[in-house]
Image (tube, rainbow, N blue to C red):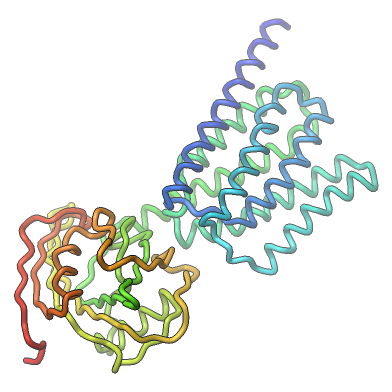
Length: 364
């Protein structure tokens, strides 16, 4: 019996350790704008896990209850942190899940039925994952992969540390362990897809400027990932560069512009070398725009997030694409240029000096 209790204590300690391993990188990435928790998901989990913890203690879970109790506080902290830069695309389904979670409290309080209450919070917690499943599928780089694996391992140790095994102690832990595993594999798989090197041949780039400030977005995937960028993208079949930049700016920010407000300032040939040695050239038509309709917003499902106005004289070049500072110093000072850029894999470094030629116009 002494040996069994000692092993249970070891499992409980390991569960607590992994709980903190899960929390700290997630919190760090929130403040670094790398991770963007879904605010409703973490609110739902705060409620459901709180009820489940009471159920596990009530079911005499013993040492196995400790890490989940501490985890409830960390989940609540992440909910509070999510007000900083979390996702807020709240649907009617999300609200229904929240109401289901709240109903579990009423069931226990009014009907004195802890088993039914734990069943309800297990269902609500699972459904509460769906906003994050959706977010992880669309934008896998907005989640911290290691956190979800630490949650899985920590939960397994919590199960092993339980003093008694019954519906009250096992159901909720089993459900969240499976859900944590699912979201881990979603992030892992989708990152594999998104991190394939993007090959693009014709594209546009736009810098909205007003009152000495330029609008940039933080890109989460594809070319320019994890850097501040201007807005734009690939030119679709049948589009002119102007049509493309108008479409891209509206898709990524909600801003509406017209052709007469576009000022073409650069054509840049990006000579890109992939990690497998393959090469491709992307011609980027670059524009300034100083008039638009609407206010910039973060658009659901887009790679560009956190639209932010920066002072033109104080741009975050250390967090932008390597050639940007050389090009911007010309185009933001009334110059029109044709440029050549040579970049390495994933466009993370320059392989040669940026070649820039000032021109009067782009007419052939």
